[in-house]
Figure 1 (cartoon, rainbow, N blue to C red):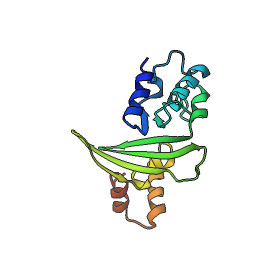
Figure 2 (cartoon, rainbow, N blue to C red):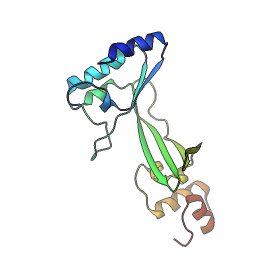
Figure 3 (cartoon, rainbow, N blue to C red):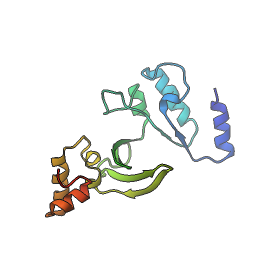
Length: 172
């Protein structure tokens, strides 16, 4: 309903990139599992003549691809998989290129650390794999996995050093 207004706004304000909070809220009639609906959404975004970024959620039971028609994947030039882990007041966010048309997909996962307090985000940094082992592994990890991962990075370390580094109680 608002597509023509968006086109006009993009042109008048020299917008270079549009971010779509969620592909499921694009506003087109029809099921997102139907190819026709997915193509309409993708064609509309491509019709803006600028770069666009859309967030797509995965199905509940399968995190290997976006929810909906495979046409969403076909329309994407780059897909980035997001993995997260929350530890206390921190969140690890792993970003890995899942699909790319004209760049390498061999780049390692990039892990960002985000810290929060009652007011919101307080800090962001490039995190080490040992800080968020589940993100690094792409799955839930055990304490043993965390210890092995840390020792694999640093070599020898005392129990206290390991506990401090992985954010666990030394007695465990």
